[in-house]
Image 1 (cartoon, one colour):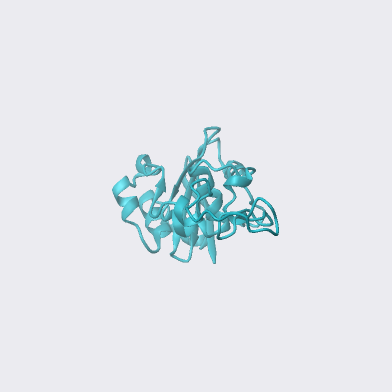
Image 2 (cartoon, one colour; image 1 turned 90 degrees about the vertical axis):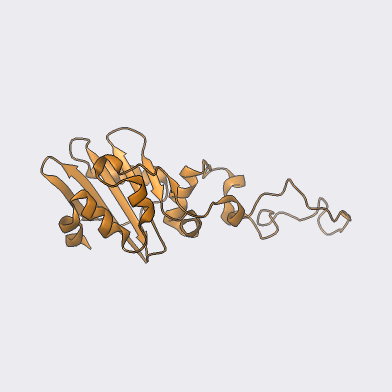
Length: 187
């Protein structure tokens, strides 16, 4: 189960709103959602948390490129919303079939692709490992935190503090930003 919230900075502090991710399929969708919540193109933070398994932060400052942090890349990669963030951080193209880890079988071939050059024949007697075979998801996604570790440092949460967060990270981040009360209203 996911919890997602937007925190938009205003002249009077932070405004919080929970958000539905049902229509979010790409990083552009998520970024647009954040920009729509922006007041005077000020900072907007999108928090996504999945049952204390991982959390992600997308930071949008006006028209600048979004900044992203994910607490556990391997756990997030197993999640549809986490995968959106991880793909961006790892530079994978969502339109490139070679970068679509979901389309790969366990043997590294794409779904429906024959394992041998000639379908129905077993002419390959080479038992060496094929180094050109695409890596599995576990090999391509690092474990642990990835992304911009200083994403919140100018807002009061240092890199060390961010990396130390484990469970209920969103509440601790909101507390450091002075937005705990407004976040609690949408939680």
